[in-house]
Length: 595
Image (cartoon, one colour):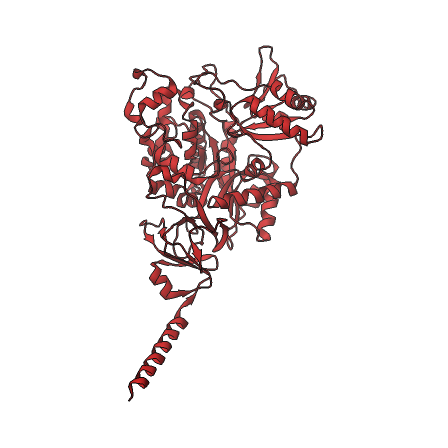
């Protein structure tokens, strides 16, 4: 046979073999290749490629393996960049984020006068009588030094907007600052001469309200503030969704919704217009909770976009406004132990009803007294209904200050501490002044809880903090601020204006504020992914990059598991994928390309 014929036969055979291989390849809707993939599976495997069909991951492996097995019209070449599971923010307020993007944004303001100027500018844009709303002020950020930081007064806002009622929420959502016009409207409906149970109306020496209402006392003013319409709420939700996706957030535990919020979510889910996954909690007691307890949890077993099977209750306020309930008085306000905002027996009763109706309960508790009462309520409810409590994954939200003897109770009772790492580095400048040198050892105590056998689902509490999960990840592994502070005990002495003997153990501040409480990077990644999924009964569906799970993934511009700690704060999301669909793409297109 002639050589030319032999060559032709060889080519035909090779082509036939190639076409046979191609025909044997399975179709995928999306391939991600050439990546550093932190799977967060049981073994912390690192892969290179993922194949997605529909909303599910169908294979994880090397780039060569995936290319040999699959073909797809949509291929993302990660070019060596990093892929992690979709971020699950385990404690946030979605509508609050939408509101913060719509109302006056007061985060980072440095004085009451600066805020007054913003209010005056908004007043010029609105007709007289229309409410001016905003959020984000924090008196702890005003002025310099560590001295007394008093609440602002209505008089400052009166000058800025005499013809408009003004309501400005503190950054933690546990206090409002209003002007005299707003108080006049409230006084026409409610008596302002007495405090509200579980709340405080800040007063001057003559007993007159100064314009700040703390915790339950907010209701006196909020009763006269017009509600947003359903259409306005939906628009705010959509703005919040876009912001979340920009940060790689593919799922949120929405901490307290009402009936209108539920209707918005249901409508969006039915129209398949929810771009990320929502695990919602009924906000507090009332007719909506009563109805849900009768009807039972609302699940989405097919698409997994909207679930309502949990209840949010409150036991105290916030540390920054001295509403957190403490066992002993505040170190910087000895006449106060904070506020218990709900009757503990009522809370226990709701927990028991929830267990019988197959609802999870999440209790807001920041102070050590509130945490103890929350644990007591869970313990008593579980004793009455042990079968229902088993596997109920009861949670305490924040778990911010815990008495040492109560830390082991979390694990022994099976209670999940749901925490927000960035709160520690936001609060560290003044938290010790509130708590003193002994109680602070049980504050933001991540390592103590982890070592006791707990997991810690992590969130941001946005809009209290920015929705950026990498700020929380950085705080978790460093316990330092963006400037790397504190580096040592000298930094802390300067912060508290202490003498050299004012620090009992300098080693506690080497490379971080009470650095022994840091998480490892492995723990921090789990906290923002798999542990959040577990806390919503969905770790078999999401939270890691494994075959069969929902295809929720984030492509980053750097590897947060290996870069120097400071670089974590600079991490940027290139692509956010939810259920196999690209929901966000960095506008510049990023370094990763498609083919």
